[in-house]
Length: 357
Image 1 (cartoon, helix red, strand yellow):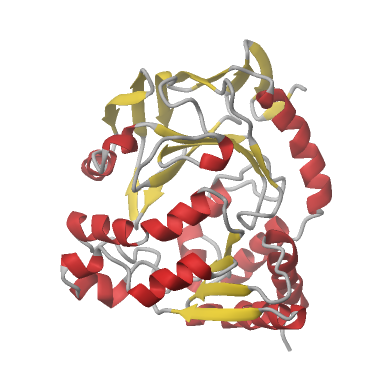
Image 2 (cartoon, one colour):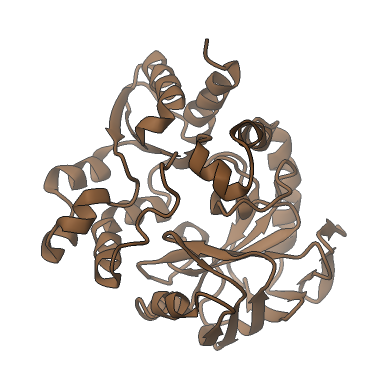
């Protein structure tokens, strides 16, 4: 018998996260390891009278095709795939990898080609012109990465996603009001004193509609505004199967003019040199999920840790006023729960991860 929480999770994804309507075509992307939640999602879509478009693959990041295809082929999506991305009415992506390091063996050229191939998909999702959600199903690889047993990860995921999202939306709405009214945000913490502007920008409240788990308020900072330094000394930055420990950025005029790391610095610099937009900020996110208190090396959860912020270098969300364009969007988490302060227009609004609103 299937765990009833899986059905509750599937209903949340279908009904709340993307709001499937009768007649919609819903692209469901996953690996075979996620079969229980995939089946539950397909059943929920079918009950509504919509069409599940199921795309299963053994690997999330290109797999054998990304390793073997000529670069000129890899850079361009198959016409049928591009048509699916352009015509479906919603996307539900379920992360359930056999190996959390998949894709890390690809050369820089091949990783860049994969990013270019998926540009039409990102164009629709980053503009929020189509409802989408990324969720996770517990598997051994991610449990091991998080330092948990599979049972512990199951409980962790359900505790993070099966919340009263209407109540969470109201709580995060209060936080968003503070930053919507602010022109300047200042982040202070160990190795960190960074100022950026949100002037003219409004935030988005992720109350279970974009990522699952939800639990963040996020903005697209003014592109040339970031000034100062930030050090991500608490947690490693994880991207495309690589880890960078102790990343440190110095910003001038909104651009990273100096970057370093205790380990993984070569990969960090290579990624920041992907294109012109990779050295500017695409997002400021404020973690608010009370069910997430520990780091797991899974950014979909880590960026929601209550009492943290995260900055994304690269592509911004046009739906929140962003104009930065890049092939990358790398979320990196900064823990403010110890000696951290968050200011809005000079007013201290959070200290050591606790709100002072």
